[in-house]
Length: 122
Image 1 (tube, rainbow, N blue to C red):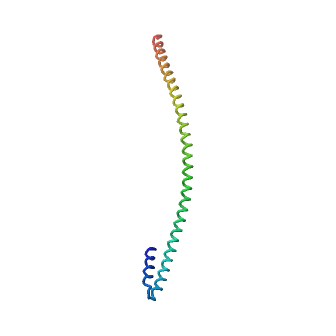
Image 2 (cartoon, rainbow, N blue to C red):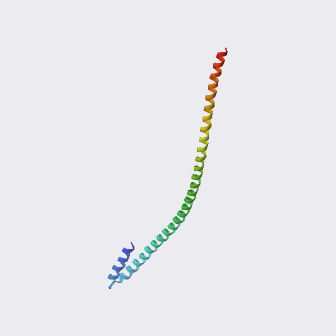
Image 3 (cartoon, one colour):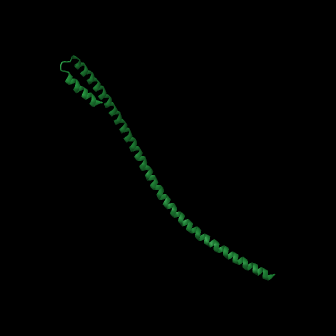
């Protein structure tokens, strides 16, 4: 749009050779050019404000992301520690379960012997 207005200014300048109307046309085009330029300048300013807001929001989000990453790292450390503890607990349970199974087997053997002894005494 600005480029077109500049072209219009050049065309009017060429036509100005003797035309009284050319000065009025030139002034109108200059005013239109200034309005367009002011509008475009305002659009640029608004874009710059929007960019600044987005940059601030981006910095805030990056800070939050860093906080979440730190918390995630802490949770991963706790998870690894809990897994290690669980492994030890499971190992202990397996040992106790084996001992209980051995105890049950011994009790069953003793029970069988007692039944045989009881039957033989009758």
